[in-house]
Image 1 (cartoon, rainbow, N blue to C red):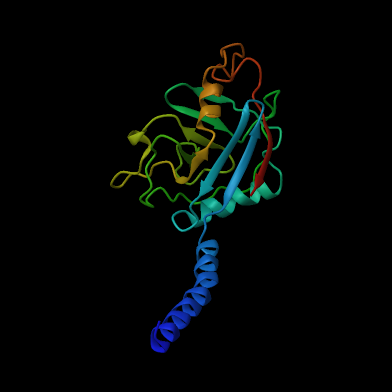
Image 2 (cartoon, helix red, strand yellow):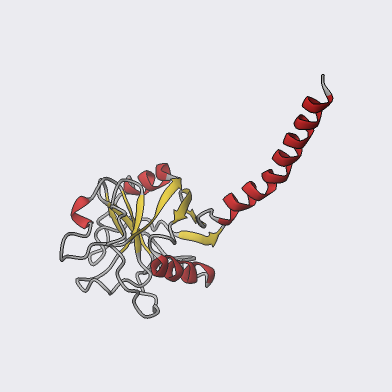
Length: 193
């Protein structure tokens, strides 16, 4: 092997070695945050999109970091539609929340199967702590021209099988919460990974 070729190979290897840590660090720095929901029926991991819904993600993470979701139940379970939590204890006492977050449903994200979106009232800017997992594509929940939708801010990356298990739980025992499972399914722990 010629000295020139050997020198070139060494130089190329050094450049490659020097560029690897920077590349790995850049990928880590741009990685989306993830949240683990440990439930009575298994674990769900949600990847969040702060670049698309910065206020919503910041709001959600503040609730997660304050351990707000720990012990709350999935109170609205509609098979082939949504699985919703974030508002009520096992005995259906509503937990006090912070001020609502501004609607960000015009961010380009759609309410598709497996995405996570904020629940709200008729006022588009009324979302606080409740969120849902879309159990199918729900285009009617998306923003339309001159009509805000429901802000998608993440996606389930692991545990859709657990969300499906929640939809199979018998419901209808509670008069005011007919969509809640008869045996409460709780978020035992919600934490940022």
